[in-house]
Image 1 (cartoon, rainbow, N blue to C red):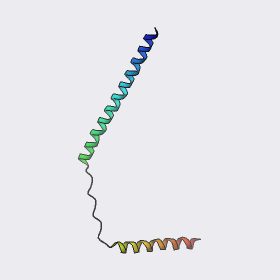
Image 2 (image 1 turned 90 degrees about the horizontal axis):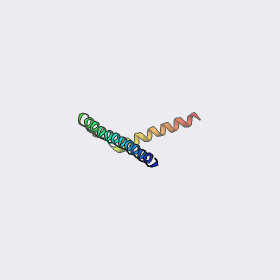
Image 3 (image 1 turned 60 degrees about the horizontal axis):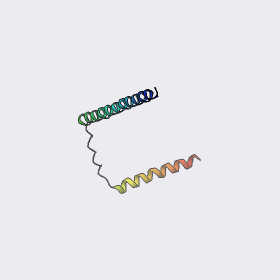
Image 4 (image 1 turned 90 degrees about the vertical axis):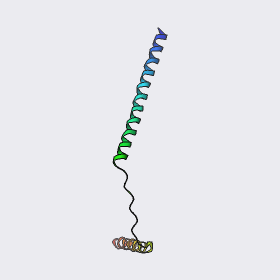
Amino acid sequence: MEEALLQQGLDITLFGMGIVFTFLLLLVIGTSIMSRIIIRNFPEAEPAAPAPGSPAADDARLRAIIKAAIDQHRKRR
C-alpha cells in the first residue's frame, strides 16, 4: 500500500514538472519568435549626428543658465 502511494506521488510530481518545463519551453520559443518579428518589422533608427557647434560655447551657456538658477533661488530666501 505504502509503495503504491509513493509511486503515485512520484508520478504526479514528474507529470507536474513536465507540464511546467513544457510551458516554460513554449514561453521561450514564443518570446524568441515575437522578438524576431519585432526586430524585422521595426528596425532601430539610426542615431542622429551631433549638431555642429563648439563645446566651449555650450559650456558657457550652461554655466550662465546654472548661475541664473542659483541667483533666482537665493533671491527667494
